[in-house]
Length: 295
Image (cartoon, rainbow, N blue to C red):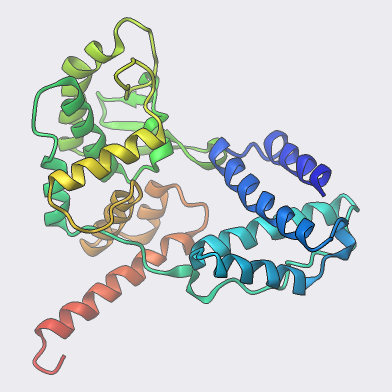
């Protein structure tokens, strides 16, 4: 089975062109799956049936994985077995008809507009790191970029004279994303006064740099947003994706159409974007319950 997994990951890399983050996620989920199979003495793909897949998902649940994480693992299993079937390494796809956890479409966490303002105001100084963090937070909320897209931005991706940037999403798909005036202003400040001291003549093309003059990582930004949320006295559990969710939710709440939000988020399927309509409906229900005499 390990040889089959190696072939599959090579296929995803060479033929599908998936990003390193996606490949790592597949590798983790399927590595856990192979450990499960080995523990049960299953060494060949033809020995695996739907019951085996269900038992694996049950083990993930017992281990405390969220419904979303279990659903992601199921997608990895379906894709893996579909590949084995196409390559005639397996007679069936045992994961094809296994249902995903019902709570897959749990509502994403968002910030209120007031909480967003507090978070964006947290980096208040004029040091290079304060300027960098302020620009990153403004851009993330103004554009809805994924964190990997944000830290992957290069100087050539900016078109500041016309107010937009090029983002490279999943499978390296390029899209044009507009920047608001506030984000443009903070980005210009950072590029003029913050980035040069951080770059230290190293010649990096990445826009957002760490203290060593190298491109900031996803993990590095995760630490930044956690620290800035503490500064802003926001008690919610904030992740780098929280601002992306807030961006989409606030646009829809203020009248943006779903197709435009889909384009800005870079979703291939509009059904992925539709989860944000559930968020806005849920918020309307909460408002009704709080303020209506018979709510």
